[in-house]
Amino acid sequence: MVYPPNYNVTMAERLIPAADLSEQISTAGKEASGTGNMKLSLNGALTIGTLDGANVEIREHVGADTFFLFGLTAEEVVERRKDAHHARHAIMDSQKLQDVLQMLAEGRFSPDQPDRYHGVVDRVWHHDYFLVASDFASYDEAQGKVAEAFRNADDWARKAARNTARMGYFSSDRAVRGYMKEIWSTDSAL
Ligand SMILES: *Cc1c(COP(=O)(O)O)cnc(C)c1O
Image 1: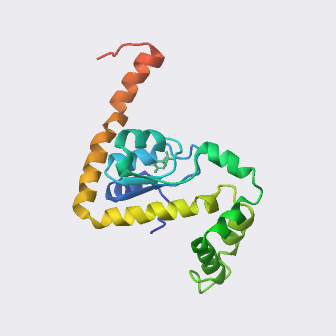
Image 2 (image 1 turned 30 degrees about the vertical axis):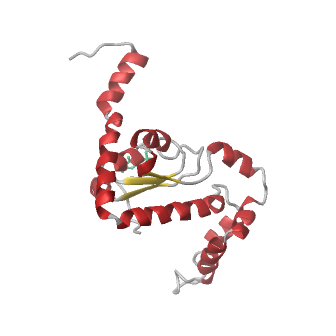
Image 3 (image 1 turned 90 degrees about the horizontal axis):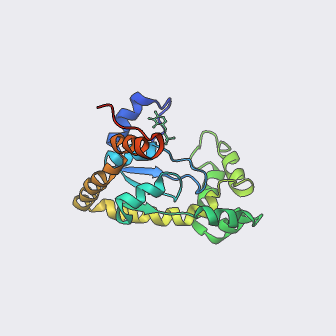
């Protein structure tokens, strides 16, 4: 995993065609995934994602077999928030998540500054607005499926080709024609 600084269009032009997996992990209902997810999917990356924003339409078009779905639905998110202790309950239900938070708290990933991620750990325990604790187990399971699928390189390549072909629906020509007909009630000048 890399965190490239100063993400911009020039960098996107290099990163997007190179990506094998597109992580579109926003909490369902936030409509966070708009077009970035489409660019990655059009360029051959398979998606691991929640049922949020354009992920929903992408999954409908590429098919469930090339979309690694995880997480709560928007309705489940609303329901889950009613439990004031949703994060604590999710953490208690997952030994793996407890281990991850413990490692972060101990500074395992920041030995030069052991308290660097205390803020992150505190937020997950006490202010988990985006329900990352509640989505963790499902995300982890989906990543297991990704890892298994990626080991079969030929099959992954087939999936990527099929995924790209099925993304044709999202072409701007089709979208603009749709707008012309349904919204602008106009004909093409050409
Ligand atoms: C497409 C794009 C975005 C917007 O991405 P979303 O996932 O729709 O929010 C932002 N920055 C760059 C450089 C892009 O290419």
